[in-house]
Length: 424
Image 1 (cartoon, helix red, strand yellow):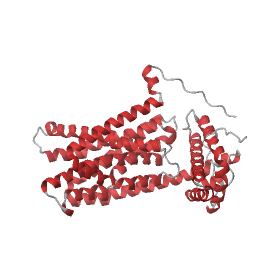
Image 2 (tube, rainbow, N blue to C red; image 1 turned 90 degrees about the vertical axis):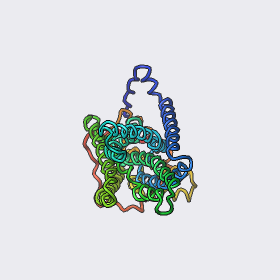
Image 3 (cartoon, rainbow, N blue to C red; image 1 turned 45 degrees about the vertical axis):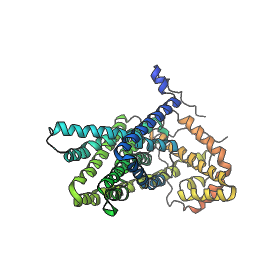
Image 4 (cartoon, one colour; image 1 turned 180 degrees about the vertical axis):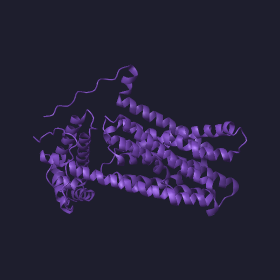
């Protein structure tokens, strides 16, 4: 039986030992996000007033469920832990927005007083700041959440889909808080100047930000997520690639953001031209890339799980069923009808463990598995063994709904396969 690798040496120094403590890190993150949230709440309320804040909060909430559902649909193959998604959303809504609000304000003031020697008006400084400063500040602040999860939740970060989902959820949180500010300010302006109906600033702002372009911030930051997803797929020996690809993704996010913000200064026709000829095709390309990457994840399951079938951990129909979202759904529904919600949850957990197992073995073939490969493999196999009595027959039945592949999927062999634990 394969022996696990020795544990890495303990970090040296008092601060390093403290930071190595997971409870301490979690507490520090919660405190940081809480303080950021309270601060941004006070700043936004100061800008919008109480009534404007409440109206902005209500309107800004409307597109959030749609975006969360879209990323949830994207993440169906191997759903991310809810704590990771909650952290990403909270970071975007609190910490990233606070950094952006403060930094953008300082940058605009500096542009007014330094670059133009005070000769430009406020609108010129705002345009320069929105086009050249805000994209750098905001995308860097949002990218910090992706970097933190990439660094400290590495086992949950396998490829492009993971990067897009984490980046998209972070950007959704950022857009949520930003929309509260913009919508609340627009409502306050209407109250002061008498805007009403469809001609009100609130209606116009809601149409642009919540109906016409709710995808804008997620689209920008998804470029950063793709960069980190590609870095997760690169071997550990390719250190330069693992650093440069996320940087390139971040730069792409800044460029997309700058083009979008700059189009607002082109007038209505220019803005619509950028929207139709640039942003919409980029969104379509991102959607296609994400679906393609998700289909690759399903192929990876069908490719790598047969090794565990040969070792006796799975029955022959299971890799077929587990590589089909339709078959998984059939198995869960059947479990719920025959045995209740607990059985459906067991099937879901069984599929999640099998998926993680396939991705773990894929990383081993690529040379990207960490030193905890053997421990993690044992842990996932144990989870399968605990649920196989319920989940195995149901998945085998659901496999009948999946047409077999016309050509068998070849097993990739870029390096010798890691050892397997044979079923006792």
